[in-house]
Figure 1 (cartoon, rainbow, N blue to C red):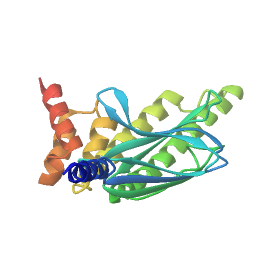
Figure 2: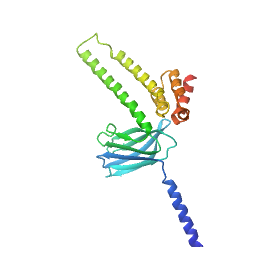
Figure 3: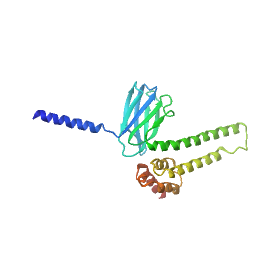
Figure 4: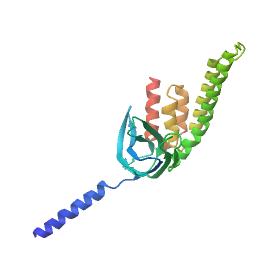
Amino acid sequence: MKQFILICISLIVLVSCGKEEHHDFTLKAHVKGLKKGTAYLQKQKDSLLVTLDSLEINGNQNFELHANLEQPELLFLKLDKNDNDEGSIAFFADKGITEINTTLKNFNYDANITGSKQQKVLEEYLVTMSRFNDRNLDMIQESLEAQKNKDTTATSLEDNFNKLLKQKYLYTINFAINHPDSEVSPYLAVSELQNTSVSFLQQIYDALDETIKMSKYGLELKSLIGKRSE
């Protein structure tokens, strides 16, 4: 009888451990040149970053982090390199596996991310945003050269910047409206368009599929519209 009880306890422990180890999201990362540091898988909650999983790295450039996701959302891979330097990579995660390949030297900029369909949509948006950012840098350079040459006929940097900012807003609005079936659309609305007209935010929300309206960022967008309309 005593032996039977011990066997039952052992089985309960094994089942409990199995449940604790089950996760529906896995991040597989490869960081070229990584020797030591601490990797964190994080998400934003309110204005804070909450750690979902972490791992001490000691000589292994390949590592995994795990979490349970209720729905698709933006996560962050943070790396503390133990040299007063940190890096963070943002990516859109969904249940399943996401892979990130990058380098220790250029942790943020060399990141190659494969995984969720939401990540593909986000990267499509970011490609165009990088062109806007490049144009912004060009404008600054042109303004500096004009000042150096004392060219008073050149259009002011402020005017050009305002025009570019308007173009970025309009592109983001149109992108969100044209991707009604992706959680990326309401995410962009709440993260990039908080200060735009409420009517534009409402247009984005109205265009969303019903399932996306009920997503994390869909609900955040609805809340934002309510607060902005008060």
